[in-house]
Amino acid sequence: MDQIFRELHKISDLLLSNKRFLHIKSCVDFAVQLAKIHEVDEDRVAVAGFAHDIFRDVKPDVLLRMAVAYRIRITKLERLNPILLHGKIAAEFVKRRFNLRDREILQAIAYHTSGKENLADIGKIVFLSDSLEENRIYDNINWLRQVAKQDLNQALFLIVENKIQYAIKRGLFILPETVRMWNWLIELQKGNSNWNWRGSAVDLNKSK
Ligand SMILES: [Fe+2]
Ligand SMILES: [Fe+2]
Image 1 (cartoon, rainbow, N blue to C red):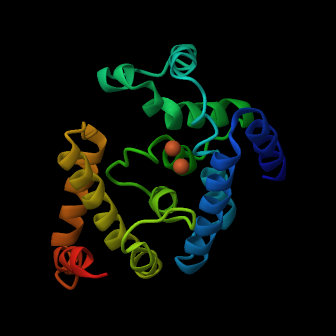
Image 2 (cartoon, protein in one colour):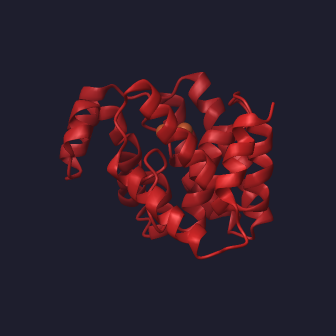
């Protein structure tokens, strides 16, 4: 693991803006906090958190060429907006460069933007940390951080709901993986009558 972190550091120096590097560091910090609380392997979470955005500052045409070289199937939406590929490319890079075969780490990296149904805990934590790390500032974020510390699924529900509402309000695409994740979360919610995620979402919008 140490060698992976050292190499990721070197790559970050080459490819990332300072602002992006700070986001990644802070994402790892928050992800490790969540991993401790929810008893998930901290090193695996940290690797996924560190790697998730290493190609985020690479130019769109280069991302498209990398995706072709890595034989990643490019969807219509990704072709229109190649930045969407940065997670899948990072996962493929980590897999090849470090011979890393940990599916949960690779999925966490590949799907950190879109989300995905049946995410493992590592994927849930990276997805949440990307939105909740300490450099992010928006209404209710402190409350959402607390929710994430108490219940990963409830926090996911609220974050995905916010993402979908944001896209609808601004007339943006909603990625199919995000829709599938939403449906999966609804199923989980229905399976646990003690949770009242919808009620929490209403509180979220009303609270200051
Ligand atoms: Fe990203
Ligand atoms: Fe990120």
